[in-house]
Amino acid sequence: MTLSKTAKIAFAVAAGVLIVCLVGIIVLALVFESLSRPSVPQNSVLVLDISGSLPDYVPDRPVERSLGIEQEQSFTNLLTQLRKAKVDGRIGAVLLDINFPGIGWGKAEELREAIADFRSSGKPVYAYLELGSNKEYYIATAAEKIYVPPPGDLLINGFAAEAMFYKGSLDKLGIEADVIQIGPKYKNAPDQYTKTQMGDGQREVINAILDEYYGRYTNAIAQARSRSVEDVKAVIDNAPYTPAQAKSLGLIDDALYRTEVDDALKARLGYAADKKLNTISGTRYREIPTDSLGLSNGEKVAVVFISGTINTGSSSSGILNGEMAGSDTIVKAVNTAAEDASIKAIVLRVDSPGGSALASDLMWKAIEDAKAKKPVVVSMSDVAASGGYYVSCNANKIIAEPTTVTGSIGLFMGKPVVKGLYDWLGVSNEYVMRGKNAGIFRESVKWTPEEREKMVEQANAIYYDSFVPKVAKGRGQTPEAINAVAQGRVWTGTQAKEKGLVDDFGGLEKAISVAKELAQLPADKDVRRVFYPVGTSWFESIFGGSQDQDAKAAKAQEQLLSQMPEDVRRAFRYAAMLERMKNGEAMALMPFELKVR
Image (cartoon, rainbow, N blue to C red; front, side, top):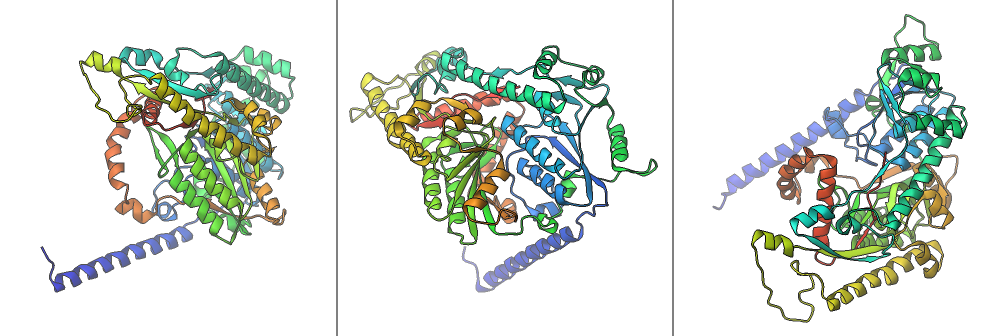
């Protein structure tokens, strides 16, 4: 039906009024946000909630925040609150409320460094944890005082690393994984589908990582609590402890309830006994702009976050696949930062176990082009392995934590063979083909010797002609030297530095400092951090974008999976990866999902 001229005009006027109203609402919301920023009384205590998933980065959405929509806390934002509090004369102390944060050991190390940096101002940090396992206690040992409530527990009873295998389940379903591994001893991600227990290479690597972590852990406790390392190891062997036992052993300072911790802070800060302690939550303190405290107001440095499994397409986040770093999103972000003349350097914050070799290479090319225009520095977070190392290898400098998991320079290819499942279901299939290798991706039969030979050629070309030479060029080494430390072998940051795969130790602040130096910016002046990717705008989140239908279609699946245990969701993630591989996609992915408890 064709609209009349009058109807078209009415429609245009209505649309214009709607747009004006929306713009007005946004402007009012921003004004309201500015007027409603919290006041911070003198000698206040900043209470930081160290809990939840704490993803590396969550785009800031000021309009949503002004409308009272709760914003997810990111790890980077948590560190920013400590930076602000250090120079904010109104903040007298920080209280860390630690409750099982979903971070790895690299971020735990970085958080301890940030706490130490804050304490260099002379202001105290107190830690409170109701239940303290290894990681929670490790973070707490960076504080001046540690408190656990009387009914709590200290569960510092040693490290355990878990590896899961799904071959038994696949056998029951009649599914077999046909795989090719470059670096067969160490590139053992397919082992999850082809074995029922660890191979020698995986066991060797996990033991090396546990040795590194346990050594750093016991040394940190010994230094923080004025004990010998031998004493600390003996204490761990006899854990867990009640708060009373932990206090008698000098592991904590006292067994206090939360209100009693406030009283301890009042005494430490010189409050009168009858005066209430002034506190401000991290959520409220986030509303204090960094530039109002003299921070983030110099030259611009871009910080590009590459978080999650690497894939082609756009970045996304969900329960099934977790965080996904899409090549389209990251390439656009790197190109934007490279082309902006006001941005003097780029820092890539990598927290990824890898993923698609193709997507990793597309990101590598954008980074290589950007490096020709301005310095590029990598800050490795918890993990930057396989494809995560691929996108890091050509930076001017690579900074990692000693406990970062990195390396894993290798790849694998494969496909699921479902003939047994078809037989069990009573399904039969038949192919009619033209071309010698037309059936190379058939799911009902394994590769023939000739087909496997072609796939091995493909895998070798990616590894020997692309991955290894690019790492060699980026690190200033020969391909032979890189191949010797590659083969899919995973390293800690400490080991990687010894092998020449990283340049120095530190977190994001260290990487920004190195970027400033390479860009010849004053060392004693802060820089304005410009974060990428920028995320979905408020307008798009309301009216939807090109991927809106896909998001709606996946919503029911996400809700179902959210009710399942984490190990089950992990199994689904790996099943989805096996499905992606069936079309010949090479995976530059860390050989195992490392969980150290």
